[in-house]
Image (cartoon, rainbow, N blue to C red; front, side, top):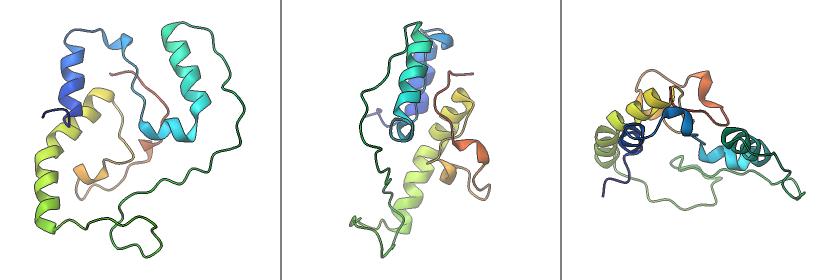
Amino acid sequence: SNLIYQGEALKNLLSVVQKEQILVIPMQSMSTDPQGVVNAVMDHIGGDRWDLPHTPEPKVDIKMNVGDNPKSTYKYVKLSNETTQALRDKLREDVLLLEKLVGKRFAWSSWARENEGDVNNTSWLTTTPV
């Protein structure tokens, strides 16, 4: 299935929909600032903002596969170096396309730019394609 190719999916969507009609929301924004996401969506569609019901402050505990972290409560299968490299080779071009279309980098995508390291513009709530 080609559903894994988010860059291609956005490119195809942009071929039939004006970019101003699209709002890109990184998944972590839903955890870190749900009210901000609701506000951004309502602003984007021209609706009235509304407040989410008050709930206790969520404990944001993002779990990621960070290899052999002994503090991790998740048990991950460690991929071989060959499998990891094959996945990176297969997906790198699409990740870079997605970032180009969005005009921002994602917190999870630094691997696609080997030897470039993280860039500070990975913390963003929502955006429209450029």
